[in-house]
Length: 216
Image (cartoon, rainbow, N blue to C red):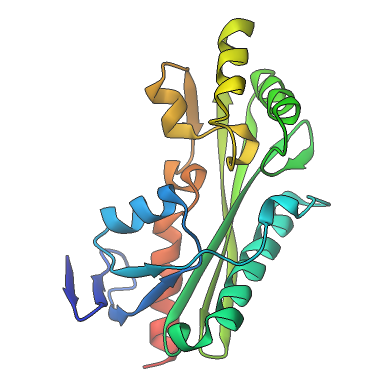
């Protein structure tokens, strides 16, 4: 059950935490998927685009560490740049990356890179990891969630049509999970589809509850 009042959202958790908390939330992103998930859950929020190019952050090392690091950078950059608008609010940031052929992959920077990522995805299941950073006052929580995605290969003609459409831009691994399903691709997810979409809401709720308990 959720109630909204004056820009705040009361979220009643149906889990073993059994707590009720009220938040005023800033989403450090203008991602349509992340905003859709929050709206689906009835959460009132302000969306502020993080003022740096996360696509320019070259992945290195362990994929979950990369995703959490970039989520932290997003949250901190929004807090520093838009301090008055963030005062007293919960800052929520997330970043999604894929691991294909043992390599961390973020958003493709060219058509060639997008095609390479998708051909790698066609070869077998790959991990999709979303790192999350939540900041409230002086406290910061970071965590990640992961899912396993399999994309069945499409014809070279379909792949080229997709690449030339540039729909892959801004998408981790070069694709949007729901969009590709809507367009007839056979895509399978083992895990939480919200994680693949960019915001693992089930886990986010738990950390928001933890933040609320600490500041009661």
